Length: 310
Image 1: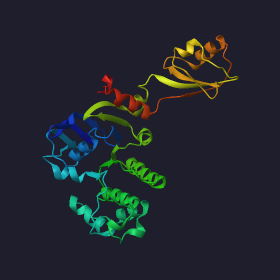
Image 2 (image 1 turned 120 degrees about the horizontal axis):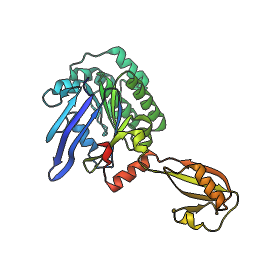
Image 3 (image 1 turned 45 degrees about the horizontal axis):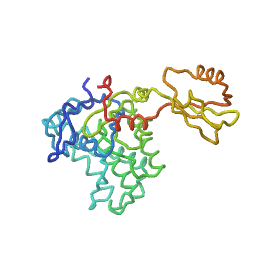
Image 4 (image 1 turned 45 degrees about the vertical axis):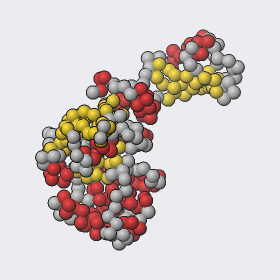
C-alpha cells in the first residue's frame, strides 16, 4: 500500500531566502501527523506546495502514489485543505459555496454528507448568509466544511483552531477524530502544542526550513532525559544543602518546597532514601515528565537534529 503522503527532497526559495530545504518525510494512511515549528519555519510553504498553491522548486510530492505535479488532478481530488488564512468566497452564501465546491474536484455533490457537515459544525442557521457577513468562528467552521465537502482521503489542517473559542475547538477536534477513525489521514500544523501531543501519532518539527526532528509523539516526549521533582518538606529550611545546590535546585514557598530535575535513570525511591540520609523530612513528592512544549523549545532553540529520528 502506498503512503498517504510522500515528500521527497522538497525545496523552495523566495528570492534569496530558502524557505524549505531538502525536506523528506512520509505519512502513513490513517495517521494523524503533526508538522510543527516556530513562525517562519516553512510549514505553510510546505503545505502550499503539497496542495498546489505554491510552485515546487525541486523535489516531489506524492499523494496516495499520485505525483502532485504530473497527476495533479488525481492528487488534488484526494486532498482537502483548511488554510491558516481565512479565505472565503464573498459573493456566495455558505449553501451555494458548499454545493459548488465538490465540482471543482470532479466529485458529485452529496447532499446527505453536506447536511451532516452543516449539522456537526452548527452552520444550519447561517446557510443563506453571505460569507463576508459571518463571524470569525463561523468562517472557520465553513472553511472546515469546505475542506471536507468532497470527501478527501487526506485532510490538511493549517492552524485550524487559531483564534477560536474553547467550544469550537472541541467541536473541531471531535469531528476530526471521527473522520480519522473512518479512515481519513490528517496532516496538522498548530501552535497549540498540547493539541498536537494529544492528537498526533507522529510529529515532525521544522526550523528555518529544515527538518530537525521526526518520530512518534511518545519518543519525542522521551527525548528529554529529565523529570521535574517538587519535594514538599515537613518543615521550612532557609538554605539548600550543597548536594541540591549542585543539581540546580530551587527553594520555593518560603522554604517548604524544593524543585529540581530528576535524571531519567534515577528512581524516586533512591531519591527519597538519599533525602532521608541527608536529614530532609519529605512530606510529599510530585514528579512531572517533560511535555511537548518543553521538547519543542529545547529542539528549536538549540536547532539540532535528533540523529536517530531521521
